[in-house]
Image (cartoon, rainbow, N blue to C red; front, side, top):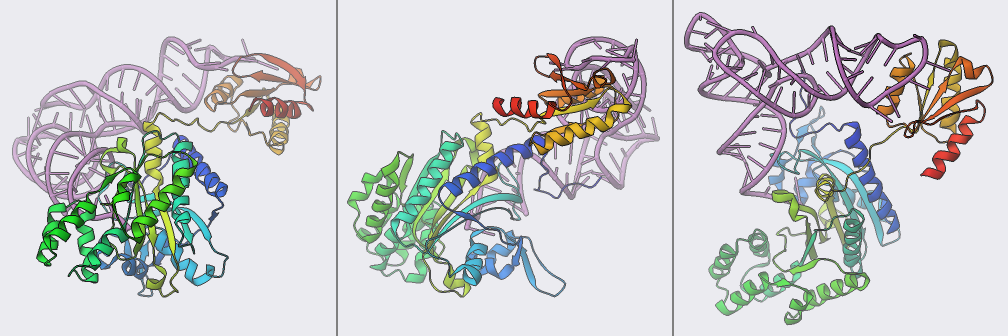
Length: 421
RNA sequence: GCCGGGGUGGGGUAGCGGUAUCCUGUGGGACUGUGGAUCCCUAGACCCGGGUUCAACUCCCGGUCCCGGCCCCA
């Protein structure tokens, strides 16, 4: 037997139905906020990702040489491809350009709970705005999304890379060393971070103040004590985001991200019930375009892991129904099969999903199958009824049956199923 | 890459150094024009490789995949 590739999944019909329902919600909310869907290739030049994240990511990507010797990678994320696309073809769109994308991504990592080698991201980007309103809108959308999905326990943690960076600017720590410090803070290695400052001859008073800020956590009031443009900007983002309802939001200035392209706010969303892989979303504002050879353009975006949203929904007890067929049509005799096919056809043309018997099975077996398919009605076409131009209509839930005109059955079912939905 | 726990029909399970139990599901039948009840029949499994042994599904080793965790998480 040939096995699945490690870390990949097959989705059975019921599961696929659930995933599609979630995607429908994602597309709906994106449209509600005025974002437009795009799609980029599964394959990209590996360079796109090594430029963004460093050569180290090659270790964690599916990459290979194609027959022309080009270095190719299966995309490990969606932001870099979107910005590449923006630079090549979308830069003349009116700004703000609001885009989203739901696609599979690939990472060569050890699979564990909520982590697969092929996974799905929902990525939202706002390109062209450097105002706090853009960052705030992402939070509004994310919060709204969690509510629509029925996720009761989600926690937003938000910071701003500029706050600590501007404090470092006044110290002997060189610009290019700042990221190394931020990486330590991001990984919560506070002792190492503190040691780092000491080793760079940062005065202990200043270093103490920096570490204090890195450990700052709480509601938006913790920002009052912090000076500078970055803190003011973050305050403004929070003010805008909270004008339309509450969100479970914590200011955590230890959320910083050590990568150079982050320019402003940075945030993460956790669903604690997911355990080790609890982060369902990460986002922030960044400047990637120049790295890829484009003009500098302010951008902010976020990416949800679709697979973890599904897990979180399931833990929250939100189950989705399976996809059923509305009507099953069967023939009681060989001579009625053509009539059966025509009835199914007229139902389908009216938008009523209908199946007919493909096995030439007995009525008993066909009804059993109809039942397993969750059909609400069965239409039975038999010689006795056909003689007077009728068919038997059976309500599969109640078992109630009635004769109904052959010509009227499709319209009647459309009416009944339409009003019941 | 590392650590721990696992792998028996499609799904869920029992079991033992002498090739396997039950439930459910599948297909057919009782049902000759009526489903989800019942009964009967049929098909269907010990992850792969090596070792120990007269004999391995069982014990040992390696691999692989799954589950969970570490590292990482763009």
